[in-house]
Picture (spheres, one colour):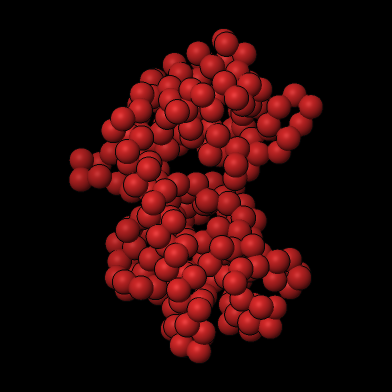
Length: 229
């Protein structure tokens, strides 16, 4: 992982894109690197949180286990995205478990180092709060979807969201290597595996998508968008 690539990653993270190159480079000097294998856990729900992470390459799922033992996935994050930033402003136990679903490279930054960096850059602190507010808004929208949308609509929305993060345009459609198992996809949608598989089968039979192991090809993106509304 060359310093130039990492520099670009820092610039591509909404929280840090307001910084000039010199500040980005200073921030990079405060960071260390970490790698995860597929299936390796970065942190567990309840662990003390003392750092944040920027994804350079790979994918990480954020999960939560309910009191009755059921698991759901809150998000799947990819390159340029940030995790673990909530404990920055509210130190305490992690609210989710973060696990790599593909080989992953990250930059890590201790809270204490970032806090002293922020003290001389109040504009960055404002920018960070705005980015956190945007993430909260997205979470609220997801919660509303769980209450008001039917399962096929949520499946369509999850596929489109994964395509935004990991999709690549091809002659046949958008190829999305999401790396999720059927169970993980169901947890992301917030429904049973059977119901989610039924929705996927329906989309396949209509010619909207093609399933390819831990990837999916989105053929009729506009139809999926309409179904996701």
